[in-house]
Length: 299
Length: 258
Image (cartoon, rainbow over all chains, first blue to last red; front, side, top):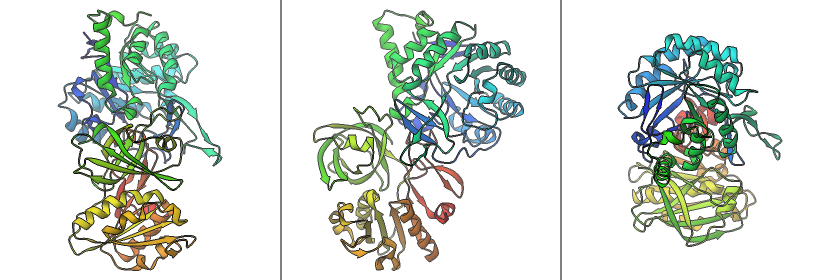
């Protein structure tokens, strides 16, 4: 009833978790049956170890939060040698978010992940707003986005998802460019660039001044962008941005997303993904829907 | 194992104008909690607060199945929590984090140094240490006596020493200036304002005394996934929520020397 397909990936249901909000899955194992997820996207992985940005890296804002973690991670080798072996037995789609500050780095990480049998896809992160070099720089320009995707396409042979930033004039132009360059799917939206100031201390809350906004505050923007992109490209769209309930997930599905990712909501209710899967089942039963694909893209 | 659970407020006590305590009943089988671990509470009914708030566990009664939280009112989250009354429910994710090491042998001595809301986890710790036959000195500090809540609760578990900036109770001055601080101990534990903990850590390092500090940073997930609450350690950024909140000062040289 809930099964969906993204390129060659079979998902038990459309519910996945967003990179950077769910660790390597293990952190949530006490709360979530990881094998009941359609998949999960592990933390952004770079060519070498990264310490990320200095504390403070987070600020709560109305119905949302700003973060400026800056891709702290142990690097691709550590992922392949250690983390992968701890999680590879899980019967779900484990997708690695691949980040970098140069085309060479993206290709290096992608080709190493390509070797891992139980990782059926990567999500190419050309949209991180919190790194000085690369990241969002690639995702805000159609030519550069296409260039990094076509280079990675040469070295990566499985499902290639490209994660898009909302911090652009036309997300449709970027989506079309990466589709033409060989992406199998696009996921959107990454965080929106934002800023908050502590007026008592007269300084920004984040050490980096600006950071990425996530949470319910960004959801209407994300639904709009998913709807625009779903109408403009042939490849499947994965929707994310502020999803915290089955009703939120259904908005994205109706707007044209084949699958969705839950991010910030995991922090508020670590078991929220299970409630969303249950809620989607319940919705289908209540509305006499035998296949969730019936409602995908109906708007 | 960590769980998400609705606790029931059994009792709410106001402690001066800035602190209150909540005794929370599990109602079933409560997960074991180590001293120094914390909970993440869901703040309901607030327009400003979305994320859970990390609060350290003040006391645990395994037989009754209750946890006690000692909360300082500082911002929108804790102000909303202060409205809770007996009978209300409070959703918590617990137990979280790496707690204090309390594997000391009987007849050893420990110094527990607390300041402000940092006093909270030391009650549970002093109880556990006392049960192990460790001789505890509990040294609590604050600007004034009113800002050292629940001090009498510590009396059964060790020698209680107080330092206040204004001399309204106990020794006049900082905790590190209290005569009891200079005595010899097998272990020092501390939780409180960062400058106080750094001073305690520096002194412990100089004297070669094993020392653990309990840090506090802004958190989102509480389980080591979002990497928002990191602190600088000698091994790089570590999550206060998962690798801490309690750290041995052996890995925090960079932190306490700043």
